[in-house]
Length: 108
Image 1 (tube, rainbow, N blue to C red):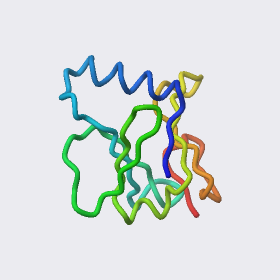
Image 2: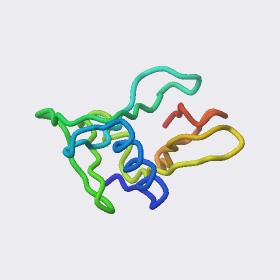
Image 3: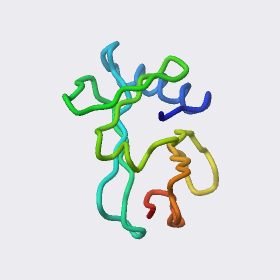
């Protein structure tokens, strides 16, 4: 399962409203090859579920991930940070053995 913090939930809801997205919009997360640690995170808003997607809902927020990416993201929590390194969504991934300094890539 992939979960969201209350902070991430509020920021997602605000962004969906600000961007005038459809009511069925969800958060799509994934993993790509690349980044300074080998794998990089993807996050975008979407409203089309693909045949191989895994669908989760936490705190009223729907999160969708493709099956391949899910293997790397099992148990991940999506948070939102407004810290010194900038504002944005943050992946708290228990499967990552190493994370780069910016937090945008990892290795297992």
